[in-house]
Length: 160
Image 1: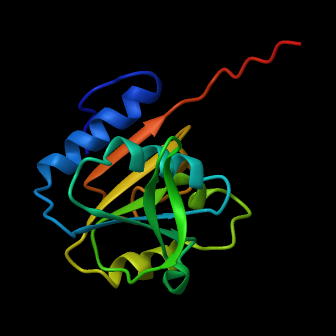
Image 2: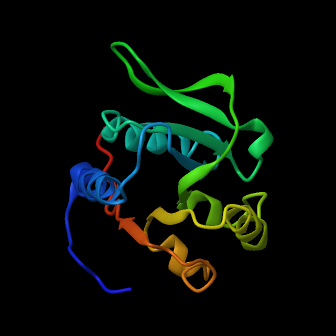
Image 3: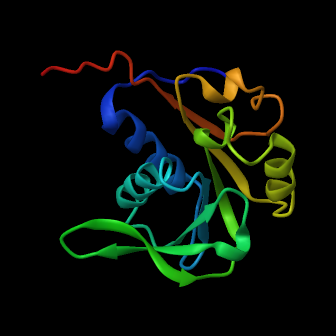
């Protein structure tokens, strides 16, 4: 892979994600399935979902690699996109792996995620991470990413 552009801020994550999905030729009912860590990845998944809310796709959240616990991501008026309580089937056209899965101490392995991705042959694979997490964890060599968005949240400033 080669660096295509360098952007900044939240729009720097969302715009290329949406542009990629528009170019992917997704049709009505096709699924974007986000795999991530409960709690920490969920708000970023909902933010990504909000950015593509006007595409005719289904969006699904899978905690870790537990597809039996997959939930629909739906619009909530006056709030944005939210993970629902509805359990749904998993049949992705696009798989989004969140970088939190690659962090130390997370209860999934790279091999578990490879098996989850491998079960959906033909799906495109997108990686969304912060601070080079996929690179640090050796996931760049383990997955055939079609797109990686790697953002930085440094420095973090706190005033009191």
